[in-house]
Amino acid sequence: MTVKRFRAASSLMVVALLAGCNDKGGDPAKQYGSNPDIPESREYLVPPMSVPQAVGWKEGETPTVPAGLRIQAMANGLMHPRIVYPLSNGDILVVESNGPGTKPLRPKDYISGLIKARGGAADKGGNRITLLRDVDGDGIPEMKTVLVDNLHSPYGVAVVADTLYVANTDAIIAYPFKPGQTEIKEPGTKLVDLPAGPINHHWTKAMVASPDGSKLYVGVGSNSNVAENGMDIEEDRAAIFEVDRLTGAKRLYATGIRNPTNLAVQPGTGQLFAVVNGRDENGPDADPDYLSSIKEGGFYGWPYSYWGQHVDDRVQPQKPDMVAKAIKPDYGLSSHVATLGVAFTQGQKVSPQFANGAFVGEHGSWNRDPLNGYQVIFVPFADGRPNGDPVPVVTDFLAQDHKTVRGRPVGVALDRTGALIVADDVGNTVWRVSGAAATH
Image (cartoon, rainbow, N blue to C red; front, side, top):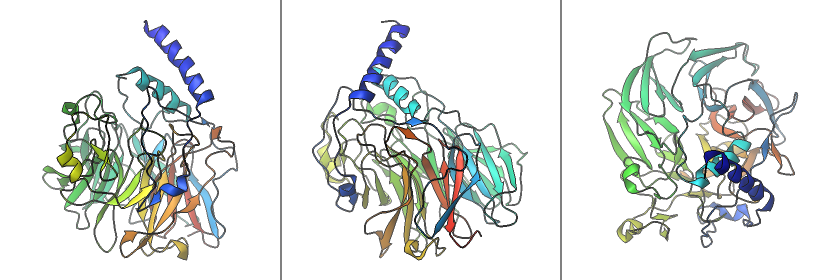
């Protein structure tokens, strides 16, 4: 089959999938918490796919927040903003990025790519970091300027000891930087290479600094769904690395984590947490995304099992010894929500309701019907662990009829006033959520 005929056939299949998907998922509410409902998996030749058309925000439109909160656009007209990183002086760094691209290995890879593009996933990224500065404290920056440009699919960032560390898709780059600067002119220095390569299935490299600043923790996603292309291309992937900030020496900190899309350190305890995307093509509900503390040396199941000892029969040969030691995550976030952001509250309160816990950005599903995610939620904590039902905080990115989507939340953070900052890569906007009576 020629490429032209293959693409035409694939496009027809996409239309059919969008129109005819009837493999319904269960109630997402049953998949939140420490003991989510996990039904039997289902295997597909081509998984059901359902993605709303990305349309963007009209003038004056915003997401919805609960009564008592206020939401406003800090910046728009950005190029696929993914990560927001507040600085000590009040400036906000915005990482504008998308993947470098990878060659489809299977027909279903090409098809899923078309589906995801419909929902805005293929939009061009800026490959830069933009700086926002709010001088008068009203939540609307008077300055929007490019801090550093011409990056290679950047994602995670951290500022430690007058240095900006940027986790590109293939390496951590260090730049001399002090809060207050509005432009970085010096060339960066490579600290350490990161797993990438020509496939680079999960391209994002999440990053967070240790409490003392001596280490950088970096999330590296798997190079496939369930190692269907062999384990040789999975070397040093589906893992979290610990990197020495001064020398660049790195070691595996935890493994078997399919796609750790964002990392955060819990205030007070110094415990590392991650939000993780579960595997695909095994049904609408089998493998929920999750939020979990990460144990040094821990193994979390991928690819042999999920949610502890739930065996994935698609992986051959199996390794029962690895399944036996797989750690069950702390808190389910429901299936296919595409969790991409996490930020702990730190005594700074958007509302007393959100005093102890973590905000989580759910980008939204592409292979589940009905759709799932497309919101920012709050996960309450008790005794240092996630506990209780999630609370929707920023919603209505998705139209009520589920046919169109105006934005999709990605990274979340708290600024120095306690306001919640949200990157929206489809709406090309950064949102700020604060108390209704406060702008600063």
